[in-house]
Every structure is written in structure tokens, then in C-alpha cells.
Length: 410
Ligand SMILES: Cc1ncc(COP(=O)(O)O)c(C=O)c1O
Figure 1 (cartoon, protein in one colour):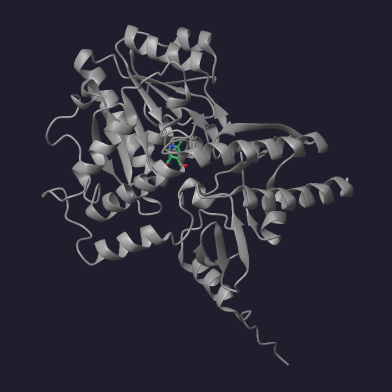
Figure 2: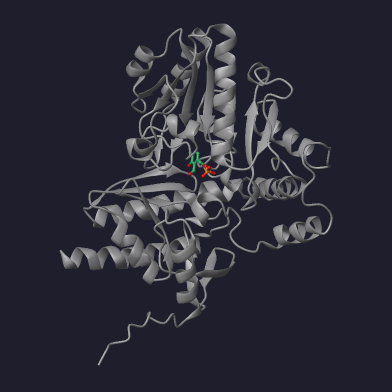
């Protein structure tokens, strides 16, 4: 008797969704095994109705959580008016958002695009244009070890992590990497050929590593001495997350870059990236030298304006709830030896372990909580800005339980 081989049957809606993604979607992501369906506030719900307290917020994007009533309202209104115009024409919201960003950042001019990597690409073009006008030899970019700037070829070229770059070489020539907060190394590497210095103010993917004020000041001084452009990548650490508009505003005295790039939370999930520059950096791009079909459309800009109005009200609680969260995590650190460090600013928090963190992420998922691990050993928390101390307490209770059962199993 011959055996008939049958394909395993996809039984639930969730199984069918996973099967379609397995069969038809590029297999570049290692997804967790849940299918998210909807959200409200700081909670996401899967297809079966299971609720998850979300402490990663779409990797720092869902700043107002899910279904925020004010965002839902403007999204509905604007969808019925105008989604896209292209940059051939004016619309009501781009100039207003640029003015707002200028006031928030202390810089002057904005270019609008759609993602973090796209904003970094534009910044690299500005650096090359700037250097090229001075000398054909002036194209070097100094960037930081452990940094992450995105997946496009230019952004990869200045990303200081070999694992992201190695399959795509050759990349842009002339990029030099220096260790974070090492002033001597920075002084040794910056010179006449340096056209730009790029700094991620609090490294995100690299494990929540904040810059020191002295380091930022030195970078500014060297950029001025050698006529290079100083770029701050605020894509993950900016737009309210550190408890200030931008992470560089944490430093006293203030160190202003020539160019600042931001994206993730700016339109709370509608793709939007920006390059915000002073006049000197803006002068590197003339008519026709750069552009973006979708960049700065009325939909994304209007949502961003609404978000920024709400952000003004939230900044104090980002600072206080962030401090409370870090204090509670530090308490856990006293109980569990495998926690080496708790660090961060505002609601950008890292818990460094001396063991891999992946299993904790899976345990949290099973227990109804979304967290993330970066750099293998750093649990990363980027919760929505609306998170409350009560929700932090819930998170801490779940973490304590997970850590306890791990400690007991050792
Ligand atoms: C600091 C930083 N720069 C750039 C990027 C790239 O942004 P995107 O994924 O929107 O292209 C990221 C994304 O995680 C980031 O964290």
C-alpha cells in the first residue's frame, strides 16, 4: 500500500497568516510567534484576544501607544481631505512642521523623507557635498563603534557593527570608526580629510550607550577646527524619548550639531523622517540635488504636528516615569546578580545582563508583555510615552517573576 503524503493543515487564522508570510515574504526577519491584531493605549492584542503590555512600542515608534483618540481623529479627517500631493506643490502642513522642528531643535531648515535610513542617506550626501566643495580628498566620515544608522548602503557604511556590514562590502570608502566616549581616539582620527562626524547620542541597537557631554563638546570642537559637519542621529533616542525634545539637549552646556536626523516616533507610525540643519549645512544642497516622492506629505506632517502638541504635555511624565522605571529596575538589580547595569534617559532604558537576554523576551511574551533584547545581552525598553507608574509596576512584577524562575533554575 502506498503512503499518501499530505501537507500539514494550517488550522487557525494565525497559522494561515504565518504560512503566507513563510511562503511569500522575504525571509529576512525572525518574528516572534504572535499575530497582533489591534491595540489600545499601552496594550497590544493578538488574534486570540491575548493582551500584551507593550514596552518596545514598535521599536520606539508608537509613542502614543495604540489608537490614541486625538491621532485617530486627525488621521480620519486628513484621510478624507488629502493623503499625498508630491513635492511639486505646497500643502498646509510641511512649512508648519518645519517651523516647529526649528523651534524644538535650535536648527533652521528641514528636509522631509520617510525613514531613518533615508534621513541618514541625505545627511551623508550633505557631508560629501560639503567636503567636495573644499577638496576632492575631503570625504572621510568619522563614526562610532557599536553605532547603528540603518540598512541602506550609505547608512550601513557608517554603522559601526561588522555583523550588519559584512555581506554587503564594498561600502562607502573613507569611514573611520572610533570607540564611544574615547576623546583621545576621536582626536587622533579627525583631521583635514574629515568631512563629517556622525554621533548617535544614545546608542540604541548598540545597547543603550549614552554619550558624555565632554565627548560631544570635543566632537563639536574638532568639527569646527577641521571644517567638518557634525551630525547627531536622533532617530531612536530623539523626539521626546529622553525626556527632552532631543537627546543632545540633555547636555549642559548645550552642544548643537550642524545636522540632526530624526524619524521613528515623529508621526507615531506613519512613516516620516527628517533632516534638520543649520544654514551652513543646508547650503550644501541646491535645487535638484536631493528629493523624495513621498517625503513630507500632508498626512504624515499633520499627524506629526498633532503628536508634537501632545508631546509638550507629556515631557514631564516621560522624565518622571522614566526615572521611576529605572529606580524599580535598579531594585531588581540588587536582587539578581546577572543584572550588571541599568542605564538610559527618560523612556529609553537598557538593562545589561551578563547572560543572553533572548529567553527573557520569550518568557515575557508568554506572560503578556512585549520587551526586546539588543546586542545579545541588553534588555531594551522603549515604552509608549503615555505609560503610567502603575503600568511600570505591572511590568516590574512580571520581570521579577521571570528573573526569579530563571534564578531558581540555575
Ligand atoms: C539610531 C538609528 N539610526 C537609524 C535607524 C534606521 O532607521 P529606519 O529603520 O527607519 O531606516 C535606526 C533604526 O533602528 C536607528 O535606531
